[in-house]
Amino acid sequence: MRIAVTGSSGKLGQAVVAHLVETGHSVTGLDAVGAPGEGFVRVDLADTGQVLDALAGVEERYDRLDAVVHLAASPAPGIRPDTALLQDNLAMTIAVFQAARRAGITRIVHASSETLLGLPLDEAPPAVPIDENQPVRPNFMYAVGKHLEEELGRKLCRLDPALSITGLRFSNVMAPEDYAAFESWQHDAAARRWNLWGYIDRRDGAHAVERALAVRGPGYATYIIAAADTVMRRDSADLLAEQFPGVPVSRPLLGRETLLSIDAARRDLGYTPRHSWLDAVE
Image 1 (cartoon, rainbow, N blue to C red):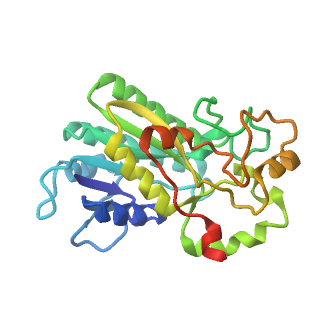
Image 2: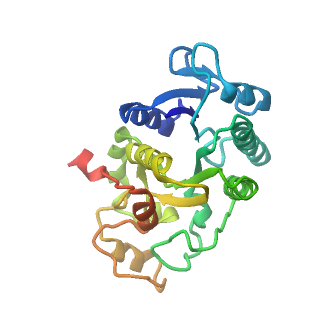
């Protein structure tokens, strides 16, 4: 496929571009930062006109696109004032979704967020592992924005039955060089309880994007995307008993397995996480 990746200069975006190229796709990065050249076009993604133009075709780059991967955003709360962050992230997503529709692009994958799962978990989750069947619980404006982006995707797919939009609720994205810091959390389980000790290796995040592009049909769907394990060396059941005693457990927990359920992504997308932080530090 010919694929545009917004936010291609970011931590996850770089891995997504590399993986899609490796799996045989023609990829162009669209971002506000980066050196223009083959495989990259500089675009202000909050400018609807620029986005419409870019997705319709760019001279000497492509004259059509088959799919869009939308990763561009201010990636966390606290980076910008709350309202500005909400407005900018929504403006980019609205522009990308609408421009794709106008250009006849029916396949979109976008970055949603684990923050919709009740993060930071100051109150206990309803049950663990947390899965997509639990109601969303956005606790700050960044998460509210991600909820609105998902709702926009659902409503657009209702309006256009041919449209396929997949929201991937990525856990805390990590690059291999980030893993050295994981040892600093091992003495204090509370340090990472805010997201049930979850993370995602950016290479596995890229794999999830590729699988969603490959297999998803029309309609909207969202999936939690996390590593198969946690950021801790201790068993997940022990962490849960210490930090969230009394929380219902829907099934037996095996060793260090993730408490952010990736069962749906495995079943529907063929998602198979291959990377663990322990492989990089041991």
